[in-house]
Amino acid sequence: DRMLDMGFEPQIRKILAKCPRKRHTLFFTATWPREVRTLASEILSKPYKVMIGNRDELKGNQDIVQLVRMVEAHRKNDAILGLLQEAGLTDRGSHGKCLVFSNTKRMCDQLTGS
Image (spheres, rainbow, N blue to C red):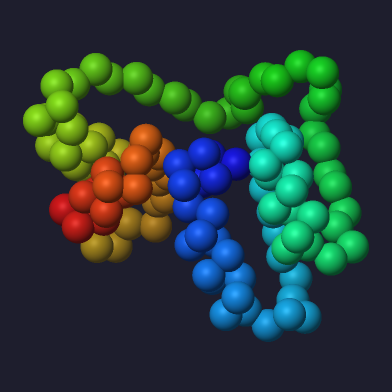
């Protein structure tokens, strides 16, 4: 749903248009806003909905470590590179994984290019 919030719906639809119509699709969302339900109804065939946890209480996974570091705008790239190095994710043989969220498509493009 965050990808929809950030304006990636056209890209999602473009990718799906290139996929075979007969396919298995996994669709994950932590919330279930109207926009996500609409997209899901258009791209999923006979969906099976799995909900984990209490649907009335939104609560983060306790096994996930979340860090907040305040940095000046011009130091964002250096800060994220430092975090990735700190976690050992910049080494060629690293098998670790990282998920980075960005507020804009422009920042996504900047991060993938750096």
